Image (cartoon, rainbow, N blue to C red):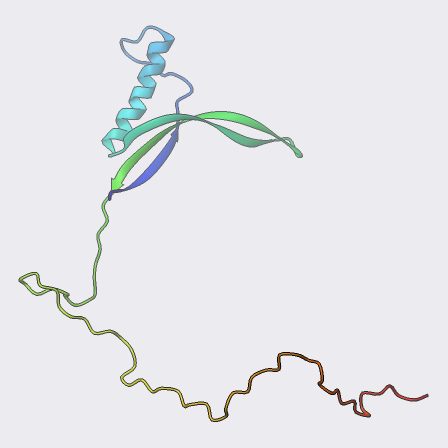
Length: 139
């Protein structure tokens, strides 16, 4: 699956001078075309234009929202992987068995020495023993 990186650039706000463009629309289109061609030469593929809000400070305590036009580009990233593992296949393409890491010898835990006693099903009939340490001090 291809991976991409993206680049967002501000769209031109003013049109520059252009040969052959006599109207304001033509000059503006030529300035957009110039940005698209420059980015294309650098390997970027045009995706879309977006109008996005940008919150900016206005004075010391307030802020305003300005809308900005941006152009979105992308290009494919070439991923190269370097492995430090030994080969896992023979030259014929047959996979090799790989050892499972772990301890050399596994020892079972010792059995429990005392027999397990079942808990009582009811607390009735159990006597409570009070000691003299639990009694409140006399005054």
